[in-house]
Image (cartoon, rainbow, N blue to C red; front, top):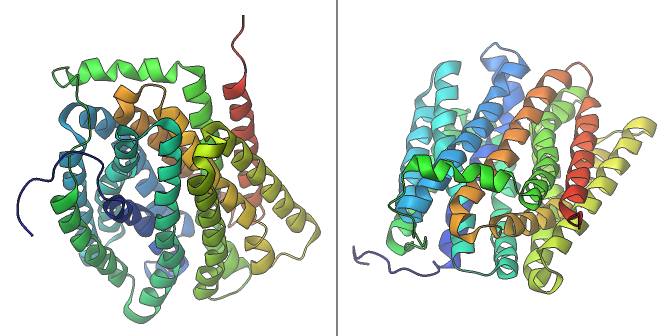
Length: 397
């Protein structure tokens, strides 16, 4: 292994997968520890949920900034800087002794995660056509779904045996080899035709993208259906542990079912993305999400409501998300391929910004009324369906 700079071109798929797994792992690994963390730090559940909410908000805001910057200076330096931030945030979390210090650690960690959450997809779009990008994003997310699948199990085990600080040690240990691999194998992919432009000029491209009905519609469709997932991970641990009276590991075990459903949607996107096309992927995925959450609402209303009836019907929502995200992302990033970084930043920020908002709401409502978890999810997928309809409207003639 030498210190030579990697050559431009499509990076190895394994590198993109590796940098993409860190953000969902860090997001999910702390979830099983949140009920116990609230008790150990003598605070309420809504306050502890800030470890999720502020993480999502920081990821969202970071993407808005780093997208245009990466269009100007390139993807590689942004990704490497993000990995350094992620490591710093993990170290801060491992030594945190107060809630403000813990929240600060999550914000720094998220600033790194937000960068490569957006840019891994921009890198794909730099080097692939629209439908090929949907297929590749599907394969990448299918592989990276292993990360959130095992994260709750890892978090629950570490919290029970070594305490919650060990969770941050685990993220640090995971990030170190990924950083080395990215430094050695990740080349530059951005075109950077407008490298001489100022950041102010690049910021002026935001209205161009947001003003495009198809870009906005598809972005909102995939973002609201994704928000239903973030609402779930914000409220489900409380429902399973506090309302249903189960141990945290039960949440971790059942979360595998949703991860498998999401992986199935990613596999369908990867296998049939080029054949079906990006727009059909998001259409099928959104429809599945609506059916799934409606079925879950029936279980809440008619019973019984158990971990099995909470998780298993929502496998279809996970399957739908696994199709919606690759398809919607590929369409949105194809509106202006020369601004793929900016578009990826807007898409990612909208996804996680809405997810954070949903997490805040559910963090306050679930302890008061646990079924509000499903009501919030149903609202998200129905709004996503409406946004998809707007995106697919034919232009007036």
